[in-house]
Image 1 (cartoon, one colour):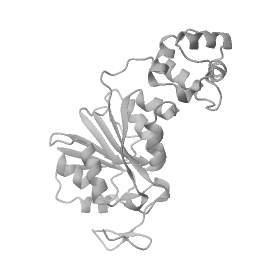
Image 2 (cartoon, one colour):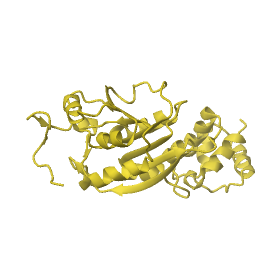
Image 3 (tube, rainbow, N blue to C red):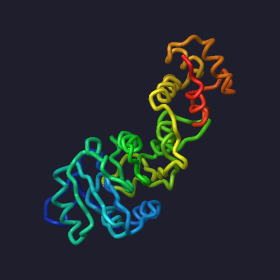
Image 4 (tube, rainbow, N blue to C red):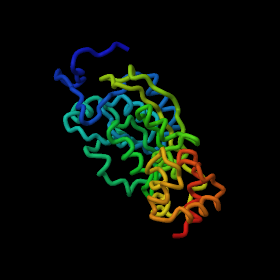
Length: 272
């Protein structure tokens, strides 16, 4: 594919130059082979409803529309909407919604998938918002920064707070890594395609207590878990010691070494 040049990209609908807005994290995916990887990871069927966040110029949107029943594309940048609509002419199964994905209501949707090249600055917030909905998506296939994808999909002994926060709701895996050369304008770092599938069965847990414990545990990652939990929960070390031993955890362990099952065990056996 011929690389765009200059400071902007010519709209297909009129001669004006479209300039990406840095503050909105706009890096448009332009390589067809990468778009195909995203589509394939989505396991799309003609009956699927797909929500796309940040359609940009509509390259991914077109492919989603060809493979699914309906696409709802949510675009925050008002300046892009006229060209986006023009680029998607002829597709009767695409609905363009002007709005912010962090403020848009999704409560009335059911049996839907989220497939998107997420804006970097809001990726983790968007992911968590969808995962905490009562009507969670059936599947999420997302393009995120490479480091963010690795953190989300990490496993012991390299767990992160973000990994626990996502994996408590979904099975997470990296589909593939994507070079920064696949985007325009070119970002400073590479990206990753991640797939967040449903947990089967869905885990049952006390959300408030669980995250209170996890946040305390990761409050100072370089410190031992016993110290973080004692200070974060305001409990004596002797009580934390007994609690850890009850869960068959070493007293010198750190939060990054705990599995999701370890955290669930701590929440289940917690008694202040």
